[in-house]
Image 1 (tube, rainbow, N blue to C red):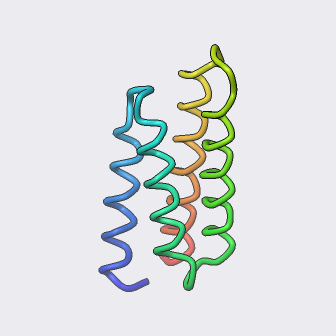
Image 2 (cartoon, rainbow, N blue to C red; image 1 turned 45 degrees about the vertical axis):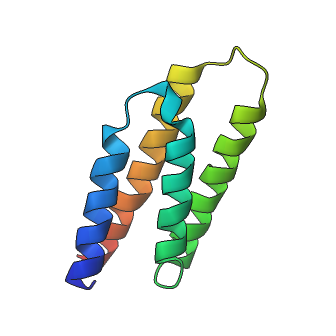
Length: 92
């Protein structure tokens, strides 16, 4: 993997892992979609997974409250981080 791409993915991973407040659902969705589009040529399968997660976040935000905000947010954030870590491991 090119060093620039690896550095970008590590930066994105750190930002995803730093999200810790519920109001950032939209930020997480936007960030997830941004990363998906950025990696789609080199990692099409992982990009598709990230797009699906972004769509799931969108659907979750449309649900009537209350829903398990903290639990869902932590799970989604973890899923995105896991995909980014897998991409970094693939290229090592």
